Length: 196
Image 1 (cartoon, rainbow, N blue to C red):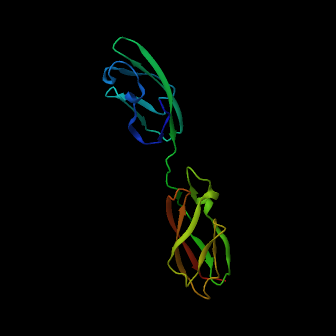
Image 2 (cartoon, rainbow, N blue to C red; image 1 turned 120 degrees about the vertical axis):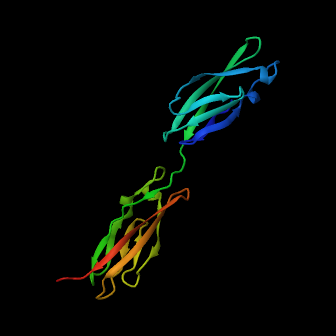
């Protein structure tokens, strides 16, 4: 029988293998009785035989790994044969999580703001490293006050704020992982008065 793969947290994966396709006996396929003799990791992936024909497996956790499954076929005369195969649990691509980007405070007339935020500190992805993620700014509400951009696909830099002006620019950042899954978060850049 072939090895099969299922995704983590995928619930019941029905009809993964049609056991009748892998038995050769002079009895009719429907006369063969199948049973699971062993599963090496049923806590990760738990398999059952449905309708004495189909192998289905259930995955309820976010763990990755594999389980060796051994199945026995028995004909009407009591003759048996066994076969083993592996069910692998692979990663589904959870969306990256971008959250908690803090408000940045810039004093009016203060000049260029270099690396005011390191986006790597506010992102998590279960599959990709921070350096594999792509960041872009999708919206800024007040670029006339202060314009910000992403530097080195990691840092937020902001140009000189408009002379003698205060206010807020709300910025939305999007992160995209290598499979195209995305998330967004917004933060504020507050240009505050110079009280000196």
